[in-house]
Amino acid sequence: MADPAEHREEEEAAAAGEEEDTGAQIAPIVKLEEVAITTGEEDEEILLDMKAKLYRFDKDGSQWKERGTGAVKLLKHKETAKVRLVMRQAKTLKICANHLVVATTKMQEHAGSDKSCVWHALDFADGELKEEMFAIRFGSVENCKKFKDLVDQIAEEQGKTEEKESEEASAAAELVEKLTVSSEDKKEEHVEKEETPPAAVDDKKDAKE
Image (cartoon, rainbow, N blue to C red; front, top):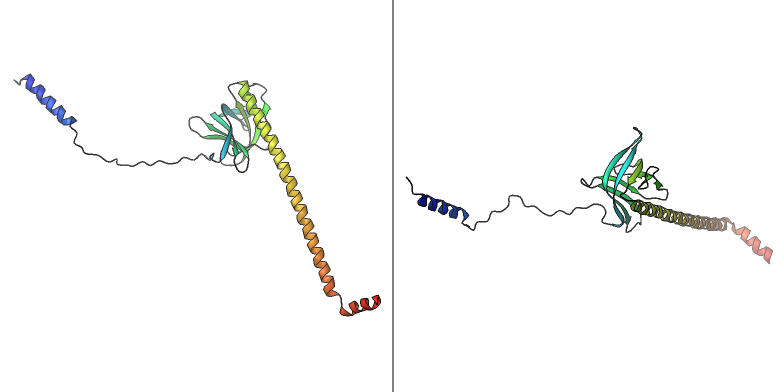
C-alpha cells in the first residue's frame, strides 16, 4: 500500500510543474484592428438630445404603431445650416426617423396627451422618401414643450432663410436679364452702323454742310 505522504508529494510536484512559467509567448491567431465607426453626424451640431418613444401612423391599418424607443436629436449641419430630426432605437441603434426640419414642419399637440405631439414629414428612415405622420411621447410635459418649441423655432428660421434665398435668386435673375438685354441692344446698334451704305453717310454730311 502506497504511503499517503509520498502520494501527496507527487501531487504537489505535478502541480508545481503545471504552474511553472516556461517563458513561451503564444501569438493570437487573429489580430483585431480598431475600426472607426461613423454615424453621419460628424459634421453636425447637436441642438437637442432627448429620450422619447416614437409612433408612426399606419394608413393601411388606420392605427398608430410603435416605431421605437430611444434618443431623438435635432442636428444642425455646420456648413449648410440645415437641421434634421434623427431618432435611433436605444438597443439596436436602428434609425426610426430621419428627415429635415423645413419651413412647413408644424408640431401639433396630441389631443390625448400633453406629453406628446404630432407632425407630418418626408422621412428617409427606410432609405426612400415617404410621407409619414409621426407622434412622439416624452417622459414629461416640460421635455415635450421644449422639443415642440425648438422645432417650431427652427421651422420659422428655415422659412426666413428660404424667403431670403428666393429674393436673392430673383434679384440675380433680374440682373442677368438686364445685362442680356443691354448686350443685345449694343449688338443691334453695331449691326445698324455696319449696314449703313457709304452714300447715305455722305448725304448726311452734305446736309449738315
